[in-house]
Length: 145
Image (cartoon, rainbow, N blue to C red; front, side, top):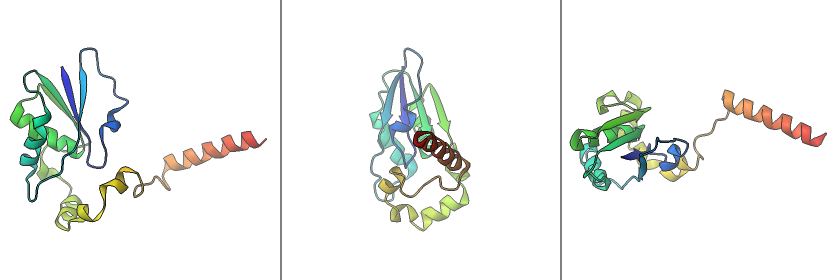
């Protein structure tokens, strides 16, 4: 059975690289397509769904915005199973700050390539960053001695 993966907007199929599917499941990574002017999520999802082989049963997995798209596709194409990760099943559950950002067209002001390359999002000041820096310092100290 084919498993179609839809990443979040600032990602691609690589976010699923560490997932191991059981034998008999074939991963297919759907790439984002450019939206048409004033295209609804529903219409966009149907265009993206043209990449799905509906002649056999399939599973959809969506991450973040990809989860919303996966739900839209599943409603039309009747996937055997739909899995959403860090997402919402319906757009009206979207947090208010995302809706405000969309109305201000912030998504058009920030090139997605910058986000994908991690130039805008850094883990500076987080616990993970501190642990990483501490581990690197210890390793460097061992190498210097």
